[in-house]
Length: 324
Image: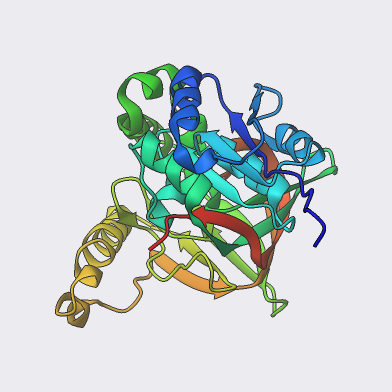
């Protein structure tokens, strides 16, 4: 039989130099036995102008059969956006404050050696991606994707008000200050939405969140029914009218979702949906806003939107997971 001349597999590491220790990752990759037989790894830095999409496209053009995202949620989202529907797997080396996709997938958060081992020796699993078109105040439309959550209203304002220097020093505690500042803003979203092309509805809400998966930092189950591979996204609208409404939200999210749902006996005490918190599920969403509002995708603010269209793409992204 003729000898095979198939090219060796090649990995590319797309890394955020402000979030990771490049030399530590290079050592971990060099020491990983699972890289035997692989071509030399391609290393590409992200920039402030391009957090990872362009770098991933370059990696694909250079023949990468695995792309490793090393950085925070913004890096992971940008790499995933470029990898969606390519069948090239994404591996994650978490290095941010939230690491939300890694947490929702149950990946190792703080063990670089284990994360690198998973990248080169793990198994591939498909997850959903949400595509989103954002209409801007100048009527232009930008095209994006996300894998965790998108938010309008209080959620996006909180992120835009977060002090990045404080975040680098104290991590997720920096969000507490930002939440307090955002809560002082009494403005509500006024929007019209249509879910799965059903009749349009008009609502007012402090926050609208579209979730591909539902757990936040601190193991907070904001969207308790969300699954990253169920072919659906989950919506939550927060619409408190007063302090009682905020208490309902806190009780539902932190106590019922965070505590009662995690035990068989506790589920018996879960209440019906409260007025201040409305949950929906679907595959396609159109939203038109009464005025430009800030929007965030996977924890990064992406400017202002006057309307959005979002739809689920089932199984569009292949993720490298640890072998059982």
